[in-house]
Image 1 (cartoon, one colour):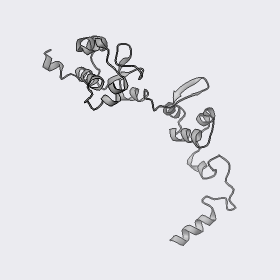
Image 2: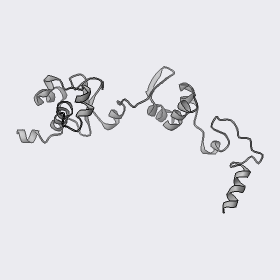
Image 3: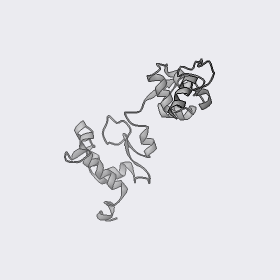
Image 4: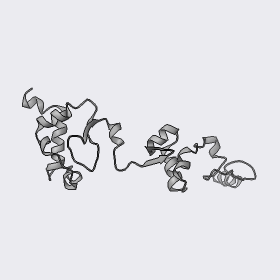
Length: 173
């Protein structure tokens, strides 16, 4: 393969982007990488060494640092899909319950609960993590019969919205 052909490969493109992020103060990504101390090891400043350690970039992947506090170096990088990379960000919320630790989105998917429901229960309602995760979500028909705290609504007509609200709505028509 000629140099010109190598420069057109996805692997070379990834390597070249790493160099820019880590070494070029004028590069757009430098402020998030090089300026924060994220480096590329000396061995990988040579493309042939990078290629020997990482192999060709598989289709649908990009380079990921396993430990985001460390730089680009052998043992700390892998080719990962966007889905895999979304699990390795500082914004993920890890929750531990019943001996298992998962990110909030994975708990929600596993238990078929909206992640916003779990987050709301913890942040707004002050529930402990286990209760927030393992309390089943209400069905839409149950939602009209209870308030946010799960207690039954007490309306004289037994309907929701309450009769006073219905009269107000009628006056707007």
